Image (cartoon, rainbow, N blue to C red; front, side, top):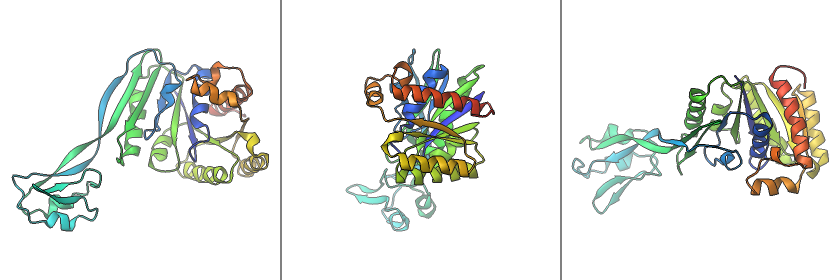
Length: 290
């Protein structure tokens, strides 16, 4: 099965809009949303079944057992994250400050601090005509890369005899992006013709190169700044990065997304341009010339 990952170096480029359109064009039946901090692909992808849901446990967090605690305060003194505070009933670990390092358990002479698995988020999977895997990370949790891997694993476990999977990644270049890139056949980077868009495009391309991933680029909202769009295309040409095309800014695109409709379902300039980008990307995914 070929795996296409759609990424952006920053938020707001239209990555999920592109991903939703590609899913519609391809009638893809294996789909994942790896933007676990703010998943939203499910809003515009048609799903025909009730979801399965289960808990995701990330790193561990400390809990102080009040019946064993001698109120010595050594754990609070040793904690570099100020995660242990004195309360009216004794010392307690602060959920959103604890990093799970375990120093408190090591230093406590009464063995009154235990490390417990932390509920870090919820995984969701739809298994109907289309297999759709996603997840939502709880506020303040830092295991997004591990959860992204779990989302991809859940998709692969449920998919049978599919030729293509389309994965909507997360913005940026951090841990969830690195986890998203692992094991895919092609990364399509959706960028925008702004200075920040160009800078972040270069960063994510460097990250993908380090991970040995094949990449391609398309520009969304190309007419916002034609000069910067040309700069992006020249950069791709100079670095032998396949350029899949450009998509114009189109108010009908926003209207479609606000109506929970993929651009594959409407006729507008952005949809037509997206179909051309999709066709070139599929050829690149198969190893042919775009």
